[in-house]
Image 1 (cartoon, rainbow, N blue to C red):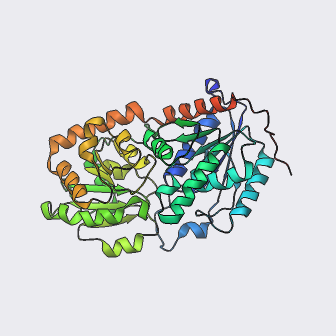
Image 2 (tube, rainbow, N blue to C red):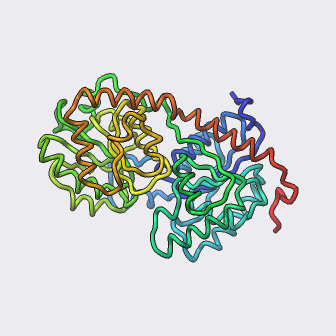
Image 3 (cartoon, helix red, strand yellow):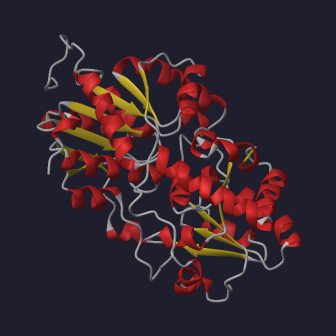
Length: 406
């Protein structure tokens, strides 16, 4: 039933998103689901992967995770193909032109842009003529270095004028934008997860037994799980370098990397004993529930979803000190469970501390669950975004046309 109190009923919201897999896609899908329920007309413009493109280089009997076009359509949104590549390149002007055509056809009341590529192409195309919210989901200049990072900062400073709000998923992400010289009308809405789906296991041993990849892992085996795309951002290579120190102290311990990505082959070749690459998972909940500790050694983030999902499953988390990490964890665990980026010694020490101290691990698990339930409910996040929309639409826009010039 439409939730009239959200103030979205009757509005047309156009989400532009690239990428269509991973955490950004899940955040967009959750927003779409809530906005459709609230009575909005929701349109999602994004790349639509082909069956061949989704299959990738490795065949798998496990169905791949749901992409954004699939999730948005299932939630009741209109999905429109927007041809764009993940990285900027020579096709940018064509992508911007396609964005302008899409905006003319949809005639949205509000445009919500997700991640750097959509923010780049759409702000170039629209230039503030439609009420616009830009959500970086981690700044592009954090992902690169040298002249590319300088160019990204210059672009974000200039393009901020074409967004009515720059919506960050953590105070730290907002602070990073300010320190980079981005002068914007800021808003912060922390990420949330579906607390009805991500829940603690009633019987963790039974969950382990039901996962074929853990057939040789006994109920008492210390198990660390890392869920994320296998790519430089998520830092699994750092985790593999840290793991031998854990294995030296706990030879029976096991580490499982759950996910696929461009680094799969390299990580497989570099994996030390005791490490399993489980591949893709249609449903990650059992992996969180099966773990003793969940780890995410990212190099950059806005506010990663995997720690929040693990916490909602009642699992303690070790993560790196990227944007959103300290805001995600319970304050009592932030110092011990948040380690410097790429610091293998600190990472292995934090993992061992939790794996070898069961009372501490139990207490951290309870605090993680309480923190997720108190601060990271997806319904709370959706309500926060709706409030941002209301603020944006209340602004006077005398110079804007609802339809872009042809």
